[in-house]
Amino acid sequence: MTVKTQDGTSCEKELQHAGRGPQNTNGLKHNRKGYSTREGSKVPPHVIDKKEKRKWKIEYVEPYGRCTIATQDIKEGEVLFVDHPVVTGPKQTSDVMCLACYRRLESWDGYQCSKCRWPLCGPECEGRGYHPLECNAFAASGYKPNQKDFSEAQYMYEAMLPLRCYCLTKMEPDKWKTLIAMESHNDLRRGTELWEREQTNVVDYLLKKVKLGVDEELLHTITGILDVNCHEVRSNLPGTQDQYLVRGIYPLCAMMSHFCVNNTHHTLMDDMTMVVIASTPIKKGEQLTATYTHVLSATTERRKHLKYGKFFDCACDRCKDPTELNMYFGALRCSQPGCGGNILCTDPLAPANDGIWESTVERLNKLVYMELRQAGEDDPVKLETIFKKYQYVFHPQHFHLVGIKHSLSQMYGRLPGYILTDLSDAQLLRKVTCCKDLLQVLDVLDPGITRLRGLTVYELHAPILLQANRAFQNTAITKREFLEQLHEAEGYLLKTVYCLKHEPLSSFEGEICKIARNSLQELQKWIQKVETLPDSHFIPEKQEALPSQLSEEDLTLETLLKKLEEQ
Ligand SMILES: C[S@@+](CC[C@H](N)C(=O)[O-])C[C@H]1O[C@@H](n2cnc3c(N)ncnc32)[C@H](O)[C@@H]1O
Image (cartoon, rainbow, N blue to C red; front, side, top):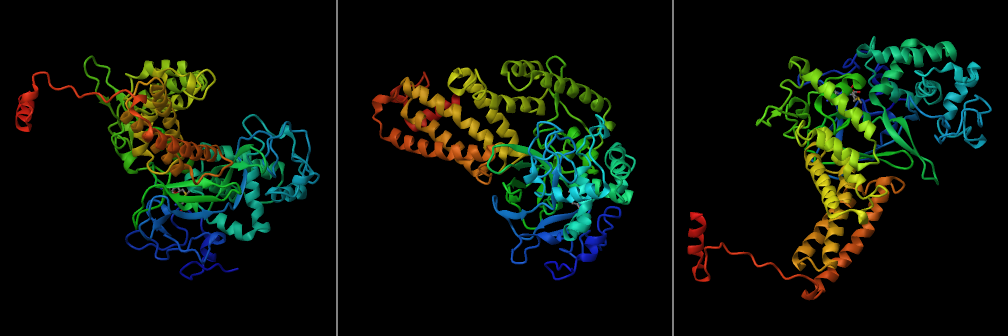
């Protein structure tokens, strides 16, 4: 089959050869600017919708490789594309699960597939999902799974998705062409810790135990493609609330470059399609970008993670800037008496050049991570203690302190013993501060439409509303202040709905969005009612105190200004 791209050229050859050679030698020619002269020729074939009017194109740009570039100005919230998985499968480390529907199973020795003997829910799952791919391969090889084949360091599902991918060669050749066109970074991975691990746990297992007749290098290419391009996704079981994490290859999503401040947002629907929207406005010519690592970690951690798992050195604007766009997300506080200045890494793209920064920060981070792990997520008192201990060690916007505030923003109001209506005014205020401080950081490092913003503004509306209503019940608030606070809470609910409206109802975020919509309706009715309430329900507006030296006779505008200037 010959696949035509949008510009009418055939991409079959490129797709067949792409991904096998070193990066940037995938059969594309580059002009002087570093752009591909055959734009669009790498669009994965099975997702091409000829009727769709695209707002972006795929181009080759150094040092990113293929990437998606806006061909017109795009507004925040616009849908960019819908992506379908080439294949999904268990993560490397998974509990015993049904290979067809991904339901967690009680034990290894429950129902086993009648053909391949791998654990499944029951006979109804034998032909479902992607299971037939590996089932046929195991059945043909005669291999029967045996718990003894897996050590503690070798998880039994680690080779499953690579095997599934290999099985596409014969069973779904179009999908295989899409998959093998993806980046594997074999040359960069060869000899690394990751390569060695995959040699033992995937390649040797499939070749020596399962006795698959396949080229060793090809298996490494597949594991590389999975390392570089996989998305962790939630699998929903129809009709249940159960959700399991699996991984999947989404070929269009995978074309987006990483930036530590990105401009797209992806939502996984119940049928496992991915909807990608612009999380911020995107200008014509800019890349559509995603984040492959945790936005709420500091430069050294993010860059290490990207180097280890995605094989590139991020040099985005956030990474280059020692202040991380003035957020001081990794900054320490100087402990010299009376100083209190910030200590920053002077060379964030090569932290080893900065004296003791790298080792000091690494030691400190290990310590804090350990304390946070021990503290757990069910006791705000423990987290507050850690916060107090480190609040003068780190910049107030340091990622550890912001991370603690993020946890506290959810713990206050949700944990048993800390239900919203049980919280003291001081605890409500703390929840508000934690949410607002987090949002301030998100505005810069994770702007626009994001799940975290949606959830955080939702958390924020609740204490504000509760405090306002409490003050109203005690007749301790003016009408103006009360309406201001109600409108503030209304704004947060509107923002919640705006940020979470794309999330499927079956997800936690979708559920919150639904609750926010209902709360919004009730709040808007309440605001209308409050506007009509007589003044007797409120305390009178405070008289603004006049500067003490001013008498009523002095109050011409001219004299007032003069006096104020003198002061
Ligand atoms: C998921 S793939 C993205 C598609 C890839 N560019 C391609 O041509 O197949 C991830 C790879 O893209 C490249 N990449 C993504 N973001 C990058 C960035 N900010 N800087 C340098 N390379 C990047 C790296 O080679 C990375 O391993």
